Length: 362
Ligand SMILES: [Zn+2]
Image 1 (tube, rainbow, N blue to C red):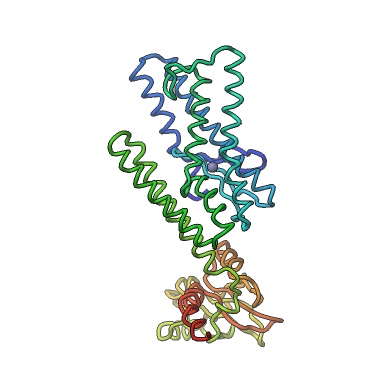
Image 2 (cartoon, rainbow, N blue to C red):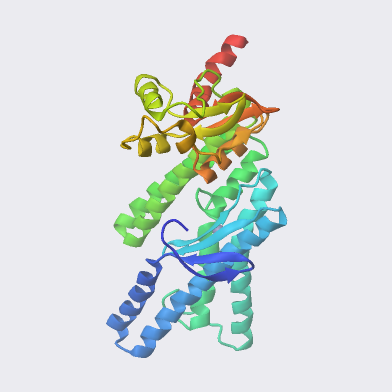
């Protein structure tokens, strides 16, 4: 987890992380109880209650993760934050019906927990509906209502809530994926504005939710747009075909001169027609202040762990691998023959000019 979560264990083989600010929420609930009731037992009960709520949130996320596993989609980790949990799936489902079931699995877990608590309350004759709310009532009663609230909130038909995914999945059975996403994201923004207005008038916590919904809706729309933009594109379509190559024996001083006067920043290194490495911008920058530049050759500083794709690799797969390896440039080759370079710029210019090229071809 990059944002500094604490790993607290594994659930069904999935790493579980807690964001440090989560504990502030637990403390806040304890403090609130102290200020109102001035008793240690109420402080403990309130803190236990919020932990129980997040236990339910964890099970909700586990519901998503296990549903995804049914479709051979693994979950990287589950992260708990004060505003809720996130199950980070390794990839997004491609079929609308799969997305529908994965999205519904979380809220269904809350419904199930509420059902279990309801049965327990019914058999212990502790079920009373008068004067009960999420704040007032027995522990089990409050937890049941909280689960019903969690289910209803998550089913709101807007991104980034589960209901937004349900909406998109249903729309995507009839519309194009990107269009379905746009509609669900627009609904998300409209709902964020509504939360914001109600939040200003009533509960400031709603403002936080409004912010979360607004940014989440935008992120989802952007990643779906990119996904549909590169769907079906292969690396041979988006690669750079005019570029300079280096030999392992080229002096670095000479390369630095080339870089400062040319447009190319990273170079494939060829020996007898075979790619043996990539001279990256990072290694050049690190080598630049070196006093022995005249005697340093490309072979001394090039990166030998480069990525090579065949021309028919999908762009989606290539981008994911380049991001994971933190490589800026990848090689495209066929039967050991160098065909092109794949870089963020080459992908960008392909996407920028593709539409005008296809229009001209019509
Ligand atoms: Zn969910």
